[in-house]
Image 1 (cartoon, one colour):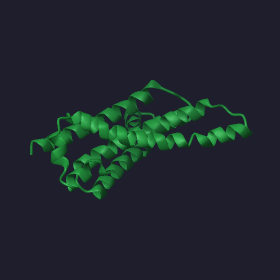
Image 2 (cartoon, helix red, strand yellow; image 1 turned 45 degrees about the vertical axis):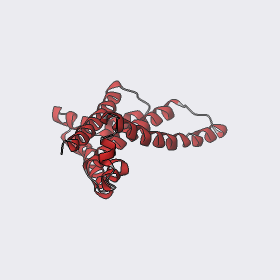
Image 3 (cartoon, rainbow, N blue to C red; image 1 turned 90 degrees about the vertical axis):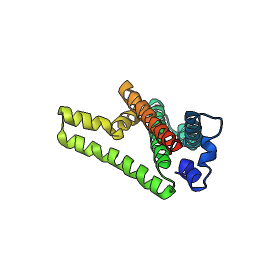
Image 4 (cartoon, rainbow, N blue to C red; image 1 turned 180 degrees about the vertical axis):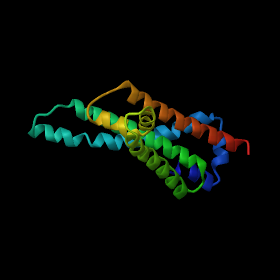
Length: 170
């Protein structure tokens, strides 16, 4: 939540925008830095199945797809956090905005299941990240899930770019 909010709060945001780096380089750099920290922490959890492998025999394919799902879900969550941080100068407000956004995307899955197997129900269920994540955790890699996470990530980073660029002209 501190990525852009702290820059605005400390009044270093103007220095960042006047640097010889392009805006999308700044956004991608901040996003990749948080993503690498997240992937490093996620990578440390590989120790658990490695130790369990010593005592039992199991299939690694669902574990790897689960890790892929966690990496994609984390990247999507982090991109929403970067977007929320670009909207405000307060970290707490950015946390609430990102939490509210992610919570509403999660609750949409319940609305989609209430509508059932209708066209509207399928469309609403597709918007929620839970359906896509559940398939990856079960061991199924579908291109629609990869497209969902990739397009959500690109959309959030694009919206972040628009927000940061709009403050340049104020």
